[in-house]
Image (tube, rainbow, N blue to C red):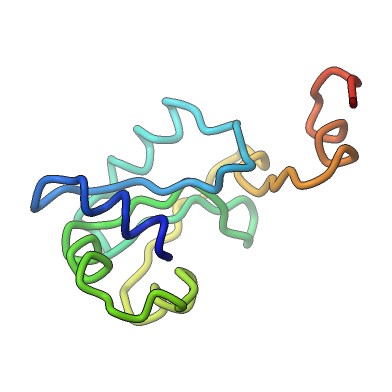
Length: 116
């Protein structure tokens, strides 16, 4: 949460914001544009493959402001977002679910089989 809040403090007031897990390099311009099409329909927009949500997440200026002013820096972002309205956008790219944390995850994601 602290990292997200630190980034948000660099935004202009009234801005939408995407946030992305650092260990998923597969965000595409097409996906970002698809999520942006739904801005204003909920407090935050999530891509979903089948019934599972992933990244990136588009958050509204209202939520950006609430994150900016949140004092509990130990809260998890998923717990924090439960107080807001969400909208899930069905996507066909299961890579939104990836979380590359190990050499095996790296290989399973389709990268060259080089592990140092």
